[in-house]
Image (cartoon, rainbow over all chains, first blue to last red; front, side, top):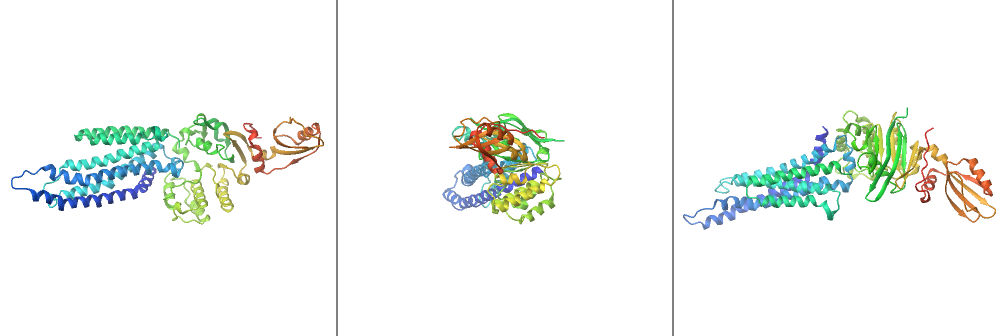
Length: 230
Length: 307
C-alpha cells in the first residue's frame, strides 16, 4: 500500500512528460514514416530497371530506423533526462525531500518506487508508440519487404538508452559534489555508455554494455541515496 | 515518570569547516511543549534535521523515542509528526490527493474525522491545490497533516514563519488541539518569542550552534534579570557578581544583565559597589532572549536542573 502510494505519486508527477514524449514520437515519427512511404520508396522503385538487385537494407532498415529512429533516440534520451531531473533535482529546489523522507517507509523503498516509476514510464510512454510504428511499417501496402526484427529490437535499445540517461541524471542529481568536480560524473558516465553502446556491432555486445552499465549506475545510485544528507 | 522522548549527546555538525551545531546535550521529557529558540542561523534547522536522521552528525548521537536518529525505522517514524520549514508539500497535489497519499503511511492511526474538522476549521476545501494556497493556508494544511495521525512526538521547524498574527493564532490553537491529548510531546522551533510564551512550558535556547539554556519557561523568565544602578560619582570599572552576563555603561550608571542571581545578591553587590540606588527591571521574554543571546555572552551555558 505504501509502495503503491509512492509509485502512484511518482507516475503522476511524470505523466505530462510521458504523454508529451509519446505524442511527439507518434506525430513526428509517424509523419516521417508516412512521408517516406510516399516519396522515398517511390523514388527507389521508379529508378529500378529490370534485373536490378534490390538492397534489402535500403528498403527496410533505412526508412524505419533512419527516419523514426532518431526521433525515438532523441525522445528517449530527452525523456530520461527530464525524468531524472523531475525525480532527483526538482525536490532539492522545492525542498520536499524532508517531507518525502519522513514517510514511514525505508529510504530503499522510496528509491525503488522512483526507479520503478521511471522504468514503467519509459516503457509505457515510448514502447506502445514504437510497436505501433513498427506494425505500420510492416504492413505490405507500406513497404514491399517486411522490416527485420533487428529494427524493432534496436528501437527498444534506444528506449533502454533513455533509461541509462535517466540513471546518469539521477546520479548527478543526488551527488553532493560541486559542479566542476564529480557532480557531473553520472551524466558523463551515461554519455560514455550511450556512445559505447552505439558503436557496438552485435546485439549481444549492445545488451552486455547496457546491462553492465545499468548495474553500475544502480549500485552507485542506491549507495548515494541511502548515504547522503537532505 | 519523566520518560525521555528526545535525547541528544554531544551532537555536533560541521558543514565543511563551519560549525553549525556544537556538542548539544539535550533531554526532552514526554508530555512537554518545548520551544526551541534561537536567532537566524543559530542551528535550529540543522539540529532538527539531525534529530530526524535527515543529516548525519559529525560527532555525537541523537535518539528519538528510544531509537537512534540515524536508523529511525518506519514504525518509529509513524509515531513522529514533522512539519517542515516553509511547509514544503507537493505543490501539484490537491489537499484531498495529499490526504490519500499521507493516509497510506498511517493506515491505522489516521483520524479522518479530525482531519476533516481541521480542514473545515481552517475554511479550506479538499479540492484546493497546494500550489494555489497562501503561505498561511499551507501552514494550516501542513499542521492538519502532521496532527491527523495523532503522533506521540511532533517536531515543527519554524511553523509560524511568515504568517500574519491572525493565522499564527489559529495555527497555535491547532497545536493546542494536540497538546490537549494526553502524553503528547511537541518540539517547535521559532524566533517569535510570543508564540513560545503562549504555548510552551519548556524553553531550549541555541545560539551559534551552542546550547545556551534548557529549562522550564518559568525558570528562564525568573532567572534573566536586568538591574539598573546609579552612582554618585563614576560607575566601577569591574563588575564581579555571580551570573553577570554583560552591562551597558553610562557616566554615572550601570545597566547589568544577570542570570540566576538572587535579588539579595544584587542588593548586596549594589551596596558594596557604592551605588546610590538600584532597581530590578522586569523584562518580557523577547527582551530576556535578546539580552541572553547578545554576542558578548556567546558560549556561556546556563542549564537548570528540573526541580
